[in-house]
Figure (tube, rainbow, N blue to C red):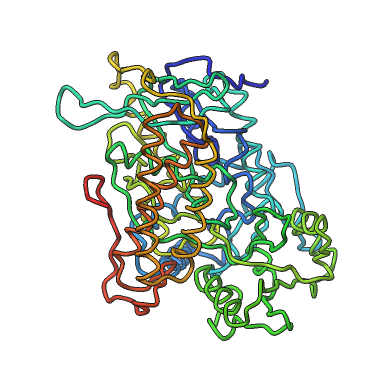
Length: 550
């Protein structure tokens, strides 16, 4: 059964903006008691979930422990993780994995004969049968996966379930413009009552009236010139929440994945950290290994350390890339464990069973985001944020590998439970103004958007990248403020388009990133500045208020 891809209702109990792991999980957990819409800007599979290779961190092995996973996470987060949130997420990891197995996700399992990985009927999997791999920052093998295409497997299983559910509408080609808030009668606090949505098929903005809205829009890595993220990662949820009056936190912590395939025709292709977990080594062009000079954990150090090491060596040598080498492993092992990477690299003439993989760091994950409670609710009543767009306190100053998908599921479970308790007390608003575009015109200068987009991403890459300093950040701030003014003027005069909305959101979020980076007078985790190279004695979150001057 395939659901219609166009908007067929303007009123829902729950409007979920974003169709990745977080959004689909929330939809499935609430659809038995609510009418749910899941909106996607493009195809449903264009979120980051579909492209996630590594896996989901969970304590499933008898040699592992909840305490170990908690301490590994806090260590990787360099003192900024919120312990109570780390404990909550890790303690609920096994439950969410069990639910995913029940949804039919075909995780890789152990072979009873050889100990190698293989696949079995997902409906008959036991948690103890799941194959576990290891990634950077983890002290044990605790990453469940579906070969090297975990996100694709999760997305397809959840999408299939959602398509079959009569209370879920999956809607493509709709871009959120802004959430709608109103002051409630009992107090002056704002409540979310819906959202304005650009229906790309009709070319017009429509109002969706909804009791609850959940932002599951992912991160903002498209602010950078080089990224592993799909094109839709434009910080939409963060920007909408900020404009609505929500706080954001720790926006300076942008995770750069150490190993993105370096090839002129390989756009945004990530080389999973799981290769290093299975013994792949990082090498300079002459074949020399270098990670031992930066961290005792070598290739299995956390991502911030590995990315800075690669950046340092590339700048020191003036080389375009470094190399990841797994060719010393048996060919059958490599092809069985990493079929997606093997096939994709082969398309570019690289046989990873015999050749090294050229790699560079690229923007990958937004560790900060919209401040939320443990239930996923934001500062605004009935507005939730889940997944990468949120700030729960789990990741601290550096997200540990494969904790991100886990967070999506655990917080979506919590949000669903919270909504179920409250939904009977909420009514649809009866007084929401329709979108008014009577004073705007169609733009005939779309080139201005592409020009500003390119200027923004180059500015962020050059001045707000892996290594920062005061001068670079201040230069970036000046340029971004000018871009913000240009974009805002353009937005006020013209009918909205998808490209305009994404640029509007990205330029706002870039300003939040820069402001957060300037305010942190230390180097911690993913934020490294030459002017303050030491770690401060006290770890504090960077929290920005919407009413402050940026």
